[in-house]
Image 1 (cartoon, rainbow, N blue to C red):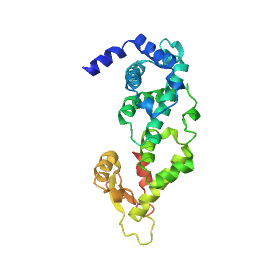
Image 2 (cartoon, rainbow, N blue to C red; image 1 turned 45 degrees about the horizontal axis):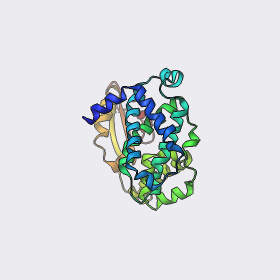
Image 3 (cartoon, rainbow, N blue to C red; image 1 turned 180 degrees about the vertical axis):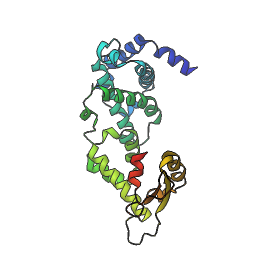
Length: 251
């Protein structure tokens, strides 16, 4: 019943527009300091949750012309304000609080993600505005390396708040950690390479069937491919049948 009511409210663009005006211009929510008291204000969070859930439905059906050109229901300025506020709110819930405010995150994040997707199509918020300035990259990486659960949740929930170079650094750390765990690249590594045979006439089928049987450890290691040509003969490969890159490019 609740979802049916939400869908009914969401189909009314005027309702969504007025609710957005009420939250931004009457409550002036994005100019208030984020505090635990705000998060515990049940009435305020209920109104914000209603805005996010109805806007999430309504914005998903607006085409680019309606959203960016006509702007009948939401102005670009309003979209920018609510995007920045939700971004800061969810970060605050994750990083600044001892207790994770899961209900607030779950009710607001889908709307934020949709706004970010529309922002990528045509920007109403500069990407730099979404970075969290008070979170220093070096501090975040140190927290992540120390297995701080907040850093993991933030990376999974709001990756765009972390500078791209920092995320790349963490990505390479993940790879290096995996290699160390599996012994890949070490002199004492005794994990054998995985060999698969691929017929040129059945690239996709053979790839799906053979790679589906490869274990996680082998999948992260060395995979060597032997091709069978159209005549059913082995192809002379390079790198000891290591033409895995060619196989990926072919499919």
